[in-house]
Each structure stands twice: as structure tokens, then as C-alpha cells.
Image 1 (cartoon, rainbow, N blue to C red):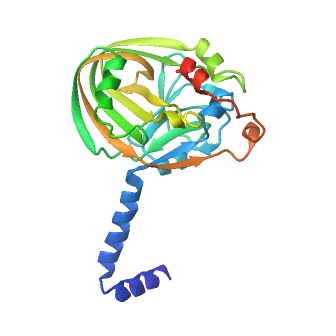
Image 2 (tube, helix red, strand yellow):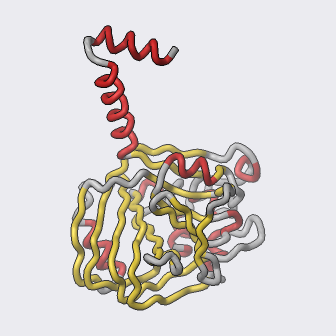
Image 3 (cartoon, one colour):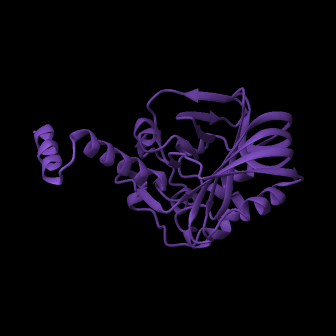
Length: 263
């Protein structure tokens, strides 16, 4: 039936079926180029709503690059090259291939639209300032991928806590790690200030080493040279939990202050 409809459409347009399918596929792929997919909101996470809402399989159907966390804040999530990695509170990294449920994550299909080199990065603020020059707007979202050898990475990972633990309280007992002369990747998202009620405003970076044995939420870094890729995102698809504590939680508070403390 679909094949017949496609042939009829191609005939009515005076083109071949191959051309029609090619154009449709190109339009579909281009529509994904600037799209981000998010599970739940940062406000819910700040208030301790960290129950799994969407399966890992579903998340990866919507993107191959991004970051997030696990049920009850059980570590930092890194999504790269279509694989999900869990950085646990003890610093260990695990490739998660099972189909578990996720409380919060943001992904996209990473296709860099601009690439550039960063030199002499002395701190995270330097890195952010260098990336700022390549963002054309403060009102759109951006995905960033930064590869290279890092002289220093200071990272942290939250540990699994009792259900309902607020993010700011989890941050008080998070473990911190220092990595030296490590090759790896920063997976980053930049979100506008107005998005603080549902996302983390500003830059949000997670790190994973090339050997996939080290990682975490980035607190500080230093590098001589990094290769950066940038992708603009202007389509936002948010999947809200339709069951559990999300339905009754009071999410009316502005999470900006608590997010700043936790990040």
C-alpha cells in the first residue's frame, strides 16, 4: 500500500520513485540535524524526581550523543557514538548495553556544522569563552564535542541515593576525581538562560577518556590543544514522565540557584 502511494506520488510529480525516496530521505535526515530530545526536566531532577521514565533503547532511537543521569542519581551518563556509559560514584566506567530506564537525559544526532581548534586552554572558563566566539546566538541551543589530550581534568560523579533525594543534597556527597595527561572527549551542551526551568543553562560538560575507563561531570580542565565540533540545535522535543512522582511533585520553584550549586 505504501509502495503504491509512493509510485502514485512520483508519477503525479513527474519524477522517478528513486528521486522521490531520495528527496524524502534527505528531508528526514536534515530535519534531525538540529533536533534535541530530552527526558523529563532539570526542575524535576533538582527536586529529587529521579525515577526511570524512558528506556535506553528509546533514548538511542532519538540520538547518539549527549548526557544525563541514572535512576536515583546513580552516576553520570555519557552518550557518545551511539553508546551509553555510566560513570559511577567510585569513578569506574561501565558500558551499559542493557535496556534500563532513564530519569533525565538530553541527546542529539551529532553532525558538526563547524569545527575549530582551541589552544592554550588554562581552565574551564577559558574553554567556555573560546567556544562562545563560535555561537551565533544566545537564544539557541548547541552541542559541542571537544577531543584531545587534557593536561588536567577535574571531574565528579554523584552516587546512588535514597529515592527522592534532591540534587543539591546529592552534590554534597559526590566523589571528585583528578585525571592527568589523559586523551579523551568532552561531550557538551550549551543552553540559553531562559531554559533554566527545564534544562541546565549555560555550558554542561561530561568527560570520557579514549579508553572509556575514566569520566565524569567536568568541574575544571586544562589542555594545550583541542579539536572542537559545534552543532546548532533549534528543535526541542521533551518527553515528560506520565507516571510516578513526577505527576504529583511541586515543580513550581525556580531551580536556577540549586542548579548552580549542584553544577
